[in-house]
Length: 135
Image 1: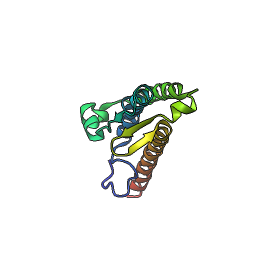
Image 2: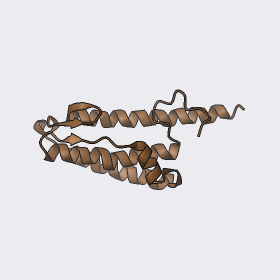
Image 3: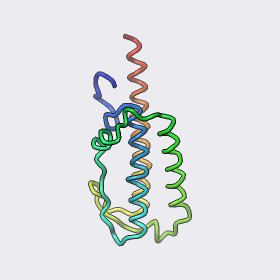
Image 4: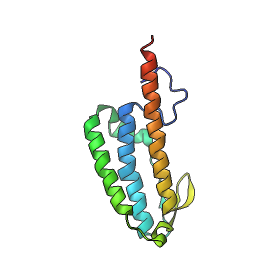
């Protein structure tokens, strides 16, 4: 971990924690939210406590290759869930805790934004690691 998290564009998570977080939010967050938005009438979609997951699932001890493989499989499943949806399905509504009312299409935009946020966090960590070599 860097000596300071000032300026990090995502949650202050190590690289393996970032990967585990993205994997778990894909499965326990976005896939569940997509299913509920498609199946229920205007559901309330819970936010997920990142810090609790980091502790409970011992992210720091996970294996990067295993985490990336699980994320890849989950993303393939997510893409299959939304492939071929009708305009009416994309327009289905829900309330996302912390974000407010949205459509399924909005939810997918949030998913993409979440990916970019954590990619930026990983790039930030790489920058910190490289800079630390200068001593």
